[in-house]
Image 1 (cartoon, helix red, strand yellow):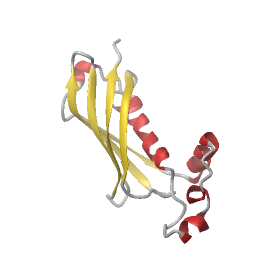
Image 2 (cartoon, rainbow, N blue to C red):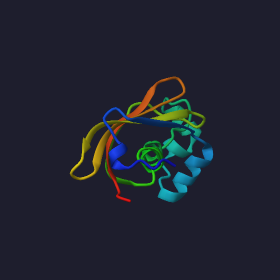
Image 3 (tube, one colour):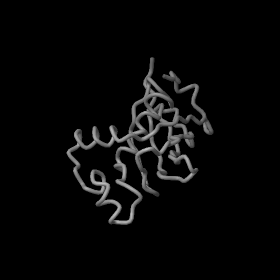
Image 4 (tube, one colour):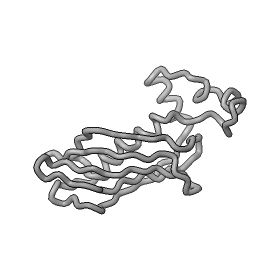
Length: 139
């Protein structure tokens, strides 16, 4: 886990990590949220609607942004203020996602920074884009 302090954060700073989406993740997300939409839970239904397989929850994909801030940038001093996400392409079980964030703005008065976020799959296709505002807690 990273331990960036606000003084260490600068425009252009970038962090990223990879995660592979599993069937267990979808099952746990379904159980946790109660979202039983068949697009996510029924492969035959999803295929009948034109998808390769059942589609991973968009909010599961977006939840990796919490890991980005809470573990990587800034890490343990993270306090997420806001998240904006646009879902560009579907994500499927077995996809390996690269989750990245790059600092675009720093507000020294409030120890808050803004970062552009992107998630791409193993084929280099962007599946999510957005931005986050993240505060950095003092020591």
